[in-house]
Image (cartoon, rainbow, N blue to C red; front, side, top):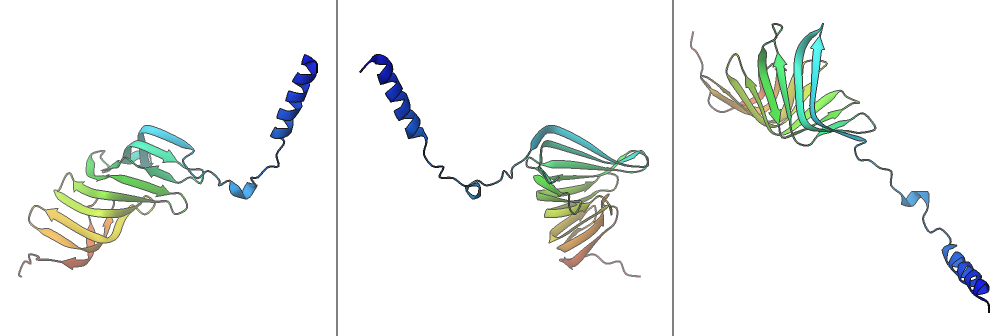
Length: 178
């Protein structure tokens, strides 16, 4: 057998070995559901009539193909008054935004601090709706003011934390007599 024939036989043998029937179908492959983009050191501003109302900061933002966003390394929201001063600040260990509802869910060590008037809210999960400018939760909340500590389950509040209502209050409260 000549050298050229031997090379041809080896080539045909390798070719035939490579011609196996495909064992995978389209059903075997799962579509990618991870982030399509990741951004670092994100700053986003929400305004009304050209006046900044909220500044959002996040170290990492993952963007998904359906428009949802995940903030896996925490989030900071500064809420501003009409005069441009910060009224309150919200911090959380992580957050997510659901495009379908337009709602942000902040989770893990959620704290809202009133800057002008000392108030501090602690909870583990809170929802923020930028369209209605409201925050709310069904979880346990603890609110500390200069004169009292309020606790309970559930909260409805304005995003600037000027007005709030604990749905199911618990604990000891001070009451002024008339």
